[in-house]
Image (tube, rainbow, N blue to C red):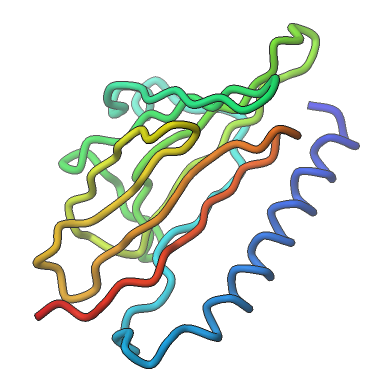
Length: 158
């Protein structure tokens, strides 16, 4: 991966983190206050054979010239590190064979069972409704090759 492309990706990811933390600071009061943001995307350049063996069936979404392939990690095979478990792996690539793909690990602080559903140009991530802190998020690729991982507000479980 070229240094300029890596720097652009890191700056974009940082901007997304800053934007999402600002957006979450304005969440409505009806949300449970003890439910922090649970998901993050971490750049990765390689996976081991052991990590690849944990990946489930792929979900593919595209926007413009970019395609994102997402493989969820089987919930029974997730490995937790620093209170975060890897829940999936995304590979973002373009039709241009000379442009190297970008890999991301999608990690979560929550241990709930998660569902992954393709919906048009995005992948919906959601935890089971009986959770005390349900997770709801959207994972998508932009027309410029960026990745959006946006958590959605969730109401208290009743």
